Picture (cartoon, rainbow over the protein chains, first blue to last red):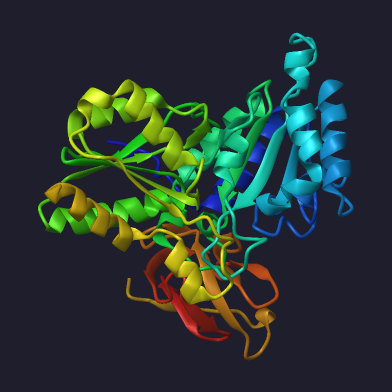
Length: 340
Length: 79
């Protein structure tokens, strides 16, 4: 009997690079622009090694002007190329917001579909490593709020690769958020979730589907990226107390997969939403509203929302840890919910 | 059978340098070809791919992902 070929484990960073490399080999209209994405390989390892493979024509280091190079991506895409552009930190989106929400998000709509903008906007998100208020946000909801953009935020290496390939092949603009801690980089905390099995061949994962990463019957916990990781940790703790939690990895911020969430809440009757973004007007509010409007009959207790309080993210490690929800916060909330 | 050989962190990384292990490309039981990438490490300055110093079968990983090692330190064994 021949054994099945072993599936290699890759970090989030390697999964991204493999996705881009395979797609660039398939389609020569794909190219990358961004700050330090050339020889340096992206400060969070999104393009390491690609410069040596594809050269400066297709892996283009740009000056420090997001307005300039993301604006250039709009023109390139309108003319038939398929640009991947990297906004180094999502926190820097302010200087390029006109390009993002008036051009990238609206030109396909305002041209009646005559102009397509197949752009992938890569951007690094997340905190937890003392990088202070201007380098630690996720801003999931800021982008999810804008019509005309698909916004994804995968957690595990296998999803990172499959969803990035889907994003590249999509004729619509996609904001692809990758979490710094989930890249598995040597100079960050190396957590287990940042390494996982990734099939070698090119494959796609839909851009609009959440994933039930742990089955359970007592309570539904919804998170994305590091909050999924914390939710899984919490679920293991809760299991020791005899509480069987279901964990949903959101994967897509926009569109949001209502069906998967409602189906789970129909089963458990209890919901905790946990978000590494701000509390007000964010994912926790959105999901609570979806369940209140379309799944009210399922709820046996009020929805619990855990998110960063409406303050800038502190530099101090202790204070930062205090504002970002973690597995202990989730465990405490679920315990409260179960006795409600 | 028992010709267990040590694999050390190579000198190219610089004397006294500490490197953290980013990712093992091989697991115990995997076949090694001389020169193919065995492990990626990160020093304070660079990420570096350590090639397999000889062909063989990977036996044991001594320094796991996320841990650090110094130049000359045994990071794995193979035969």
